[in-house]
Amino acid sequence: MARVALFFATIMLFVVCLAQAGDGSALIIERCLGCHGMEKSCEVSTSDPDWWKQTVLRMVEYKTGLLSENEAAQVAFFLADKQQRTTLCSSN
Image 1 (spheres, rainbow, N blue to C red):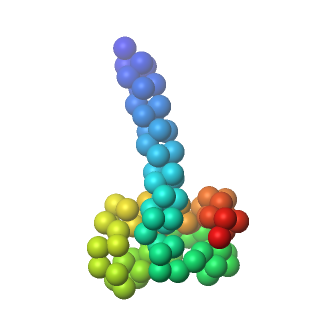
Image 2 (cartoon, helix red, strand yellow):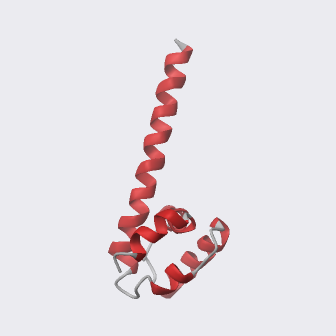
């Protein structure tokens, strides 16, 4: 019984992680690209999540209500992953 519960908990965690990555992309498209393109973000070489978090929070300071704290974390998580970030670079 415990193994079944652990199995389902693992699957749910995996699904949540995938959903968060997708949400980061959608949030960037819906809320960030209205003010600027992805050019600068695509040139950045760092994958440091803390650096991206600070950068996203700085953008939120420029435009009040742009992203909630959770949404900012999702965007930063997405941008910190170079492979994910480049999916938006090729479309911009």
